[in-house]
Length: 311
Image (cartoon, rainbow, N blue to C red; front, side, top):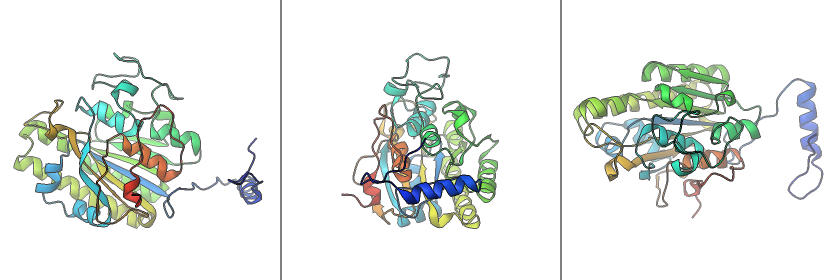
């Protein structure tokens, strides 16, 4: 049984009435965000996108996001600078030392390092699982272009998971879902930049072309949010899992560990280059802050409050 008390410890009559009314009419209570004016969060993760790629390719959409929001080109991935450890860290609010995902070979039933904590999904808790647990009515979606991403979270916590073929289809599926369901939290994973890095090398014209394609798809995502009537109430985060050197990544160089981190939407300070340090796992804590969620004790991440005007 849920008892309704407000912050002053008195009975919250309005809250009780709203819930009772919603149950009577078969409705679910709306998701209430801690950041005013926000109903939706969309994360676009571009595999292999380096700060160099953003700065040297033609990226008018990402440039526009930075003008309208907060950003840094000096955020950091975790070691090793491989995909699974970093995508996991981004959504798990912790590093490999905590969640135990140390390579792309990790599987929920096959690992070298046990996690420090296990959530309801049988793995280290992610932002998806935290949102589902604390806001059961939330609509949560993931559209990913690399099959390995799909094993890094509690699949039962999401309403839809689509492992798509290529970045264009990934974006199209996400945009269609915006219109159909107006999800609270959406993760879009694009994989083609990493392919270009491995095939042609970071810093090549082909690599920059792949960055420009990602930028165009970010633009299509923004258009899709607007067409769905979501854009004005959406916080959008664009980031990456790692950079690269030559045709590879996984090592301990600045080119591999530094990643872009861009956030824009209601409550975010415009044209703000962040001076505070941002780790990739801070993404999960920032989303938790936006939705007013209580972060698990096992997370080590901090919310990027500077993006919202905090000193």
